[in-house]
Length: 169
Image 1 (cartoon, helix red, strand yellow):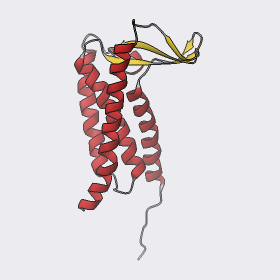
Image 2 (spheres, one colour):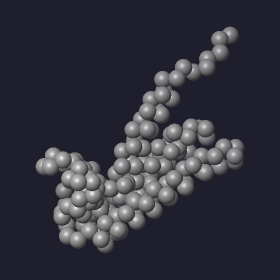
Image 3 (cartoon, rainbow, N blue to C red):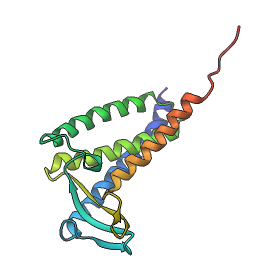
Image 4 (tube, helix red, strand yellow):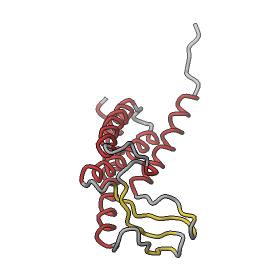
């Protein structure tokens, strides 16, 4: 039993902490080195730019009114609890599901840290698009949450669609 738990932990915790460290480091670098809010700095021509922005709301600037910050803090904590429950329930050999959960949890913790740290909200700085056709400005945590969510959905869907080994008498 202990070796099964250790297998999951050896994947989950280092990946979560690596992502959290990368996210927090890149956000602080963006705050320190990108002068001015909403001033684009071309990285790969006009396609990839770094543009410092703060999002006091949720994904895609979803707002729940004047208490959005604290509502989203509470929701994030509840969701992290559910994700940790999924981690505990994951099979030790299900590396895909464990890695996906680590990505989502690490990203959620990175954005949660920003939300608690400052009323300005979550630091976003990656700006992708062409000309006036731009995607939302985002960060490393957002990428991890998105990728992790897609991988987790696929892993759970495959798990649910696999035929069970049923013994017939």
